[in-house]
Length: 143
Image (cartoon, rainbow, N blue to C red; front, side, top):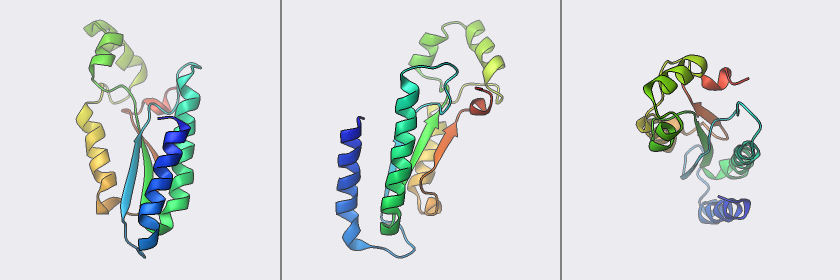
């Protein structure tokens, strides 16, 4: 989403929930899906991902007092059609995993879903403004 769409989303959430300030509770969740937080090489997507994480932190600061949490999920290599296209052979997948992913495998879509469900739940009421990698440890090895 572009900056204007994010601003409109944030404004709409704020307008919807601000009148109902909920001391100590939660009224809403905004969860953004970004991408790997650290790119292995400079590319055009890296600044956009950084901007999304920054937007989420700022919005979290603005909306937290109204019971709205704002967090970002930053997936690494998730076993999808896009990844299989990038790594079409078992050998290329194994080589990439060995060099880049300490967990030893690509994540699965449900790995993202589990985190999103947690962030949307009352259990995550005090997590706000976070950018959480789901990458099998790859973010720590990208540099």
